[in-house]
Amino acid sequence: MADKITSGHSQPEAVLAEVQHEEDLRTKARALKRPRRPASYSGQSEDSNAYAARASRLSPNHMSDPEKAAFPDYIFPLTARKSYLRARNYVLAQWLRNPKVRLELDALVDAAKSDLIPGVRDEDLVIDAFRFLDRYRYINFGILPIVRPAKDGSTHLRRPRIIVVGAGMAGVTAARELLNLYGNHPESLEPIVTILEGRKRVGGRIFTFPLHTRAPGKDEAPGVDLAAQIITGFEGGNPLDCVVKSQLGLPLHFLYDANKCKLYDVDGKEADSTADELAGEFFNEILEQSCYTIMEDGVPIVQNGPRIRQEPEDPEQGGKNPSLGEIFDHHLQRHEKFERLRPLDMRLVHWHMANLEFANGAIVDRLSLQHWDQDDDFEFDGHHAMIPGGYGQVPHAYAFGGGAALDIRFDKAVEKIVVEKAHDDVTNSMDGMIKIICRDRSEFVCDAVVVTVPLGVLKVGIKCISVGAEPFFISYFRLESFNIIHPDIAILENSSDRPVGNGTVQ
Image (cartoon, rainbow, N blue to C red; front, side, top):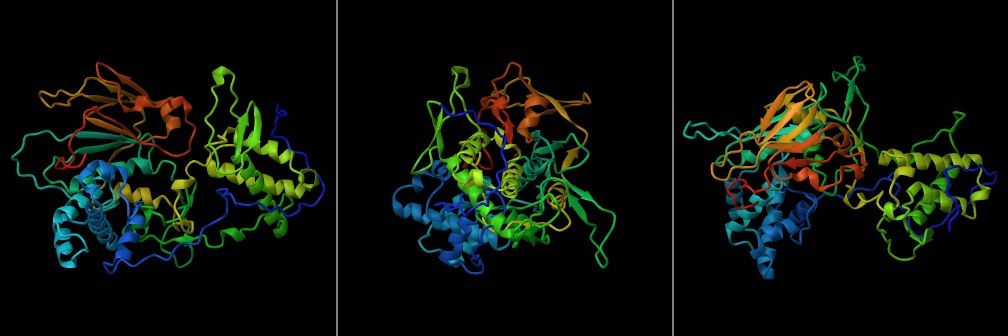
């Protein structure tokens, strides 16, 4: 059995020697990537269209699973699939040429006819690709002028009512995208979208504290970001590339030299740069060993070959699931160089540990050994950047920009969500389906609710009750098992599918 692993570290006195290791495991710390040179959207070349797909988180040469489900006839033969992909990539390139303007279907079809897309002879391919990309928010997203359909008074149908809980970035985005989506479907009734926010401001964990002093010659009021403050790369499909750069045109400060950031020791003096570099390499080696560790009969074993994400043991059956911090300490204290580390070396190693904790929003003793870095495959590329004037400009623009402010009710902390009855298929009525009860005892009735609060808030702050209705979406996962720092979205509505737009894409 392994020795008892503790988080205490001794402070040896020898110099840290250079550590070599096969793979530099990214630590979510100061390492930044060199951005790829972007392709031009000015032409309609195969390369620019393929780049548009990659910039939209799609493969230029393969259909995504939702695309296969929507268009099974395009999967085979190969010629049909290639023709659809050329049409889809073309639509994405047209959108990215000018994301300030809503891409209209009629104009797109006319442009496709004149551009003569290779291998695309049927305009239905372009129409299908447009409708899919619009439905799944690959195009026409962000802060665009909201299209209000003309009211001719010919219909007496009630507009659907949607409540969004939370005016953080997820909440204002969800509300804005609902309106964007219906902007391209004038034949559908535009929903009434209302946001309930417990605070007196928008942004959630994006909060720019305004300052009242201005730099000489500057008109903009400065601000200090007290929460989220860094955009972690614009490449690899980050939708903020369109929103921040093109639609809002905000200034950016890129962190090109973040690797050269100086560290200062406890005495206020700059830490030795060589010792800092070697401590970082040493830390990465221990972290890599930890990530390749699995438990066999309670003993940590470092695996060779591909990394294995071991399923956690059942604590009720006496299983033990060691944290990343426990296994890191295990390998650190058994490393051949551990006894020769100076106090300075240990302080530098601890800095890297603290930086990793900062990036994950939790101490290492509460991070999963196998899954602490599970989001790495989905992170964006490119230099990290900050927004002069504050990150809060982005959620503020989502809430109040686009020529029409969202309907946000502040000081409305939600306490309870009650599903009172199921959808009536005979009358197609959804009246009173969901009731939202706030802390101030005010109530809101809606047809669907989108919950965008962090899961930690959802665990302790909102009760979800089903009365005479089928269990709803939020009950499928175990809330008590979550401990993350990112907001999530849960949609509570009738379990039956309803058509979106013209019903061709669900």
